[in-house]
Image (tube, rainbow, N blue to C red):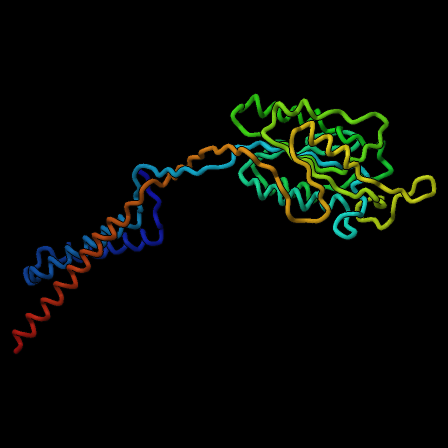
Length: 321
């Protein structure tokens, strides 16, 4: 049994017990006090004691409820190479603006999943290990920007592949029954001479995947840095980035997943085919509340008190007549 007292009510109830007990003891042997008055004072003491029990709020047992949450592990890959600063998304915004909007929408649509985020430019890293805190993912992406052009050394769209594979393999080892999804956000522009690595080895871990592509075939100029109004210039001429949609389609085929070209917010398709539901048991340490039983007893005593007073005054009126 546990107790979760309301201290203000408990203090008032204890004071009431002390007063009623004092009055009762003070008149216990007084022959001039009528029997009815003694009964009333005993009743008052009973009401005060029951109010103490109400204020203590005793509980018994425990309460358990079961909810179901998504049992999916989700790996998000984000391209942050200089070309993600190209301004051909939604009427002049950067491609990275599109990634921010879409990752936020994705996290909301997969609420309850575990998320991990891999970002890549010259190198790849785990920017956020597995977490069920979707707000942490959104906060990370809100603060994420592309790598400043002067520090770039060419784009490899498969740069983060091995890092993502390690996360997916970790998920499979820890819980083989989970669903696993990979979501790739990038423009597909491969500027390194070597061909991008295949994503086919990741397929063994996945329940589903989607590749989201940003940019246009005609291309667009790139801002030199986040917050800058200057554009990248190469060899004295404006540098233009063209999306590699063919590369992105090839990646989607290697993963046997979906592909979606993203030009503006809205309409995001996460291609979730077989979500796993996991039961989550929530135990309430307060258990079953019992104060209401004592409150009913107190109400009964008060009704008895009122009925006794009404009956007494009716008898008194008849006698006076």
